[in-house]
Image (cartoon, rainbow, N blue to C red):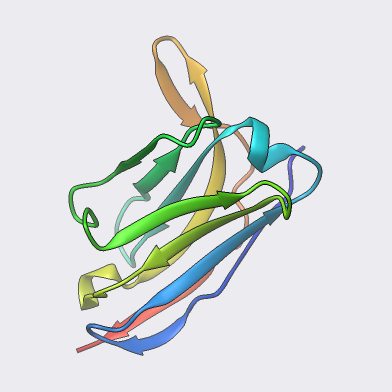
Length: 121
């Protein structure tokens, strides 16, 4: 079972920035499609951004132009650079692998504890 550890969250004011990190063992991050997800209080978990093993990225509309997903294969670490943060971005952020099944992608591993991001107005 893959182990993913998220970090980098915190409390910042609207308009500020944070960089989240997702660390994994071995070559998990480098060889897999990866994604960042978030879950706000009382809401379902939602996909924020994804990156393929080839480096192609995709973003949810609500973060497009503000967030950047990236990967450092040497460190086996996934990043999410978050700029121009809004109070609506407040949530627990998670990373996970993505697997292809029946024509679509799904989270491929066990969800970790995530990292809390809180944006004040």
